[in-house]
View (cartoon, rainbow, N blue to C red):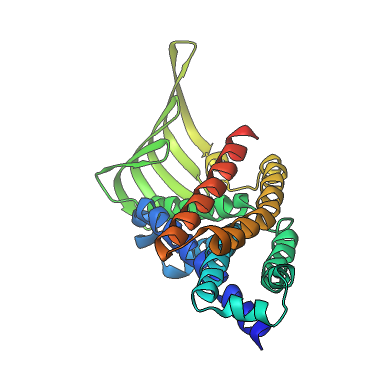
Length: 286
């Protein structure tokens, strides 16, 4: 009965803390992307939110274990439950084993997910969100206004659905001025009758055309970078390997060192900071 209670408390607290930390980090990200999220239907943002919570709930599992184990162990010590267990001839090693069952489950889950979940997947979903937002702007360009979209500046004198008239577009080192144009989606434009101005080696060149296609798709493509995934797999494995050490630090510190709730919170803060410093140092090193 007691084993099941400890298992449930640690499991519940670990996952709640991991979700809470993922939510806090998401709120910062949402603040930066608020203009994009507001400008798109909620269904377009769901893949981004889902990938965020799935990955970062996994990433913050070690932090959740620190909080859960430290609070549970200190609460049992304060309520004399640990002393009662020892009076029934349960050795410290046996008590450690009971606590380690929950940490062992999360260690196994984290080990499996280390080969399935990567931060690059979150970046992929975020880039997809930005692509949809840019596409939405370019498909609904206002008349007689200069609009900046990524590396492009676009001006349209008139528009009829997807047909544009009196178009000015600046992209990288090129400027296109055309009588008519249409936006085909995915960063692709088709121009009719106009001029192309390019700058090469410090010189400007003017070219007239009847039809011209500009493909900026490389700037609108979200792809998963395989090199990043190989590095992030190492980060995931190190993150997983930190679980036993953080578990022992939280368990031992709560039972042997802490004499008040304030000291428990200090212990938790030190463990969380040490974990994040480790992961940040590894990230900039790889």
